[in-house]
Image (cartoon, rainbow, N blue to C red; front, top):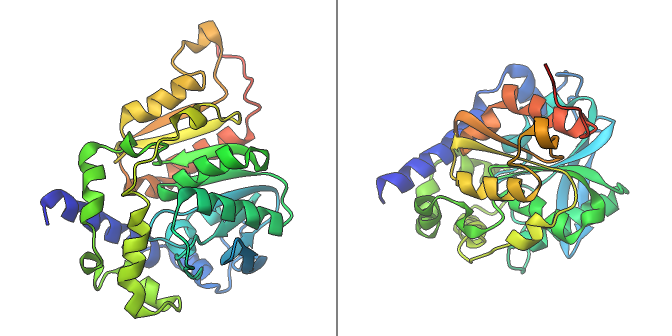
Length: 310
């Protein structure tokens, strides 16, 4: 295994360790359903269960009240590992979280894993919950799902937030993209990723199949550039300056959505772009103090502001 691949895996493991083991006590309680509240968010979901969509029994949870926002997790992750520390910060919204095919408590089925299929599953979940439209936020793999949801089911998407996600396979830095084909289950033995897989009722013997299936979606070329640029809803894309996502990839979409012009002369675009300093791919969702205010400002804005003047 080369050093770059090892670093990617160490970072993946570190994310799980930070998300699952090093939260403040009250956030650990929230993830486990213990009593107590944080930032106005109930300690337990107001609703949880399984939605039967497209032959899948998709596990979901709903927190709080207000304008709905759907959070779509990254590869190998689940609700507590990706979102336990973010849900409390969205306490004035109805937060809908789900676990994608083969992840967490959503069991795998005899269907290839695809961004398109997972987007259809999220669409089905919204119909199950009788939510006409929602803000959609996707991280990493979830960003691809979010892009596809906006492309395939635009009527269900109010605004779109993409964190460290891509709309084409070459949106990744070349060395990051090349590393995907080398990832195996052996690299994750004894890590929190394997521990969580086992703890949520999955068959431990199927862990190698889980790793193989999840990484399969990034071993096939994909390019939704044309469709992504034609997304009509406002979009906020955020990447780190040390992310796996190329700057040019994010900038290309931002320009297509009206960016790349001086606001005082042309007005502000409805879509937004952020490149967070000192931030890696995994570090993105640890930047909650920066990220959540930017996300909520985007979601709450009328998007027709007058640029500040002297």
